[in-house]
Amino acid sequence: MSSLLIQDEPLLVLPRLASKIGLNEAIFLQQIHYWLKRSKHYYDDRYWVYNSITNWHKQFPFWNERTLKRIVKNLEEFNLLISGNYNKLKFDKTKWYSINYDRLVELEIDNDCDKLSQRKEHIVMMENDNMSQPIPETTQKINSENTTQKDIVEIINYLNSVCNTSYRISTKKTQMLIKSRLQEGFNINEFKEVIETKAKEWLYTEHAKYLRPETLFGTKFEGYLQQRKMVKSNGFNKGNRYSTKSFEENELPF
Image 1: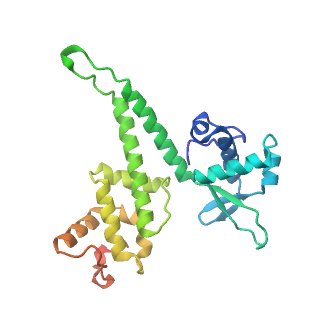
Image 2: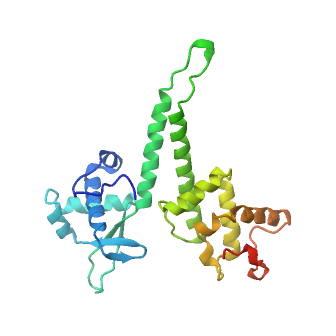
Image 3: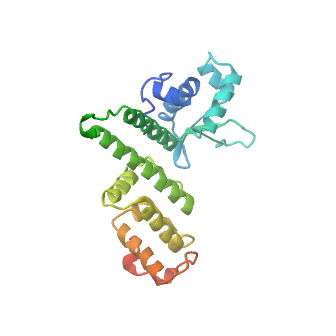
């Protein structure tokens, strides 16, 4: 869950969020989050709330309906607010709303990087021997954490793009797996190579369900990477699909 949203009373908002998306949008998004925490409407892997603009106006009497429509539109354009229709009656056009928490995580990362950049601008150069002042350990730690988070965002977005999936960046297990492989010395390009290799092998087959972080980025990650290198060395065309009949049992994720 994003730290940009509080868990308690409605109509409270964090200044960090307001500075990113605007005060009105931050207040409305916080209220949506408040009701999502209490919602029992779970569809397509997320919770939803529904309301008409007229009813939203009752919760925000200090805004007119035109302002509310503009706020909702802005949040949708920010890709922070997701709209849907889960009404039982076809003629019912009441909109349903959910929050794109992965997008909020990206906002946090961007915010942390901005802060880090500002801190670097204030690093003082030592005059003696023209030596630069050492970078504080805390700055190095922040830099490493920001880099890792950016890597996670890029890797999961790439997986979703190649495999037509919708895995969340904020899932703790996914983050743990990627961090573990990064700590072992693997880089983003190698993650992408594994994704491409297994997508060519499993996509549109009975094994497509294994195109998921816990399989691709688990203990067999290095083996999948070596498979990619072996395919390259044997001269296979990148566009060719592998036959599922050639799988060895120890290559399967089960």
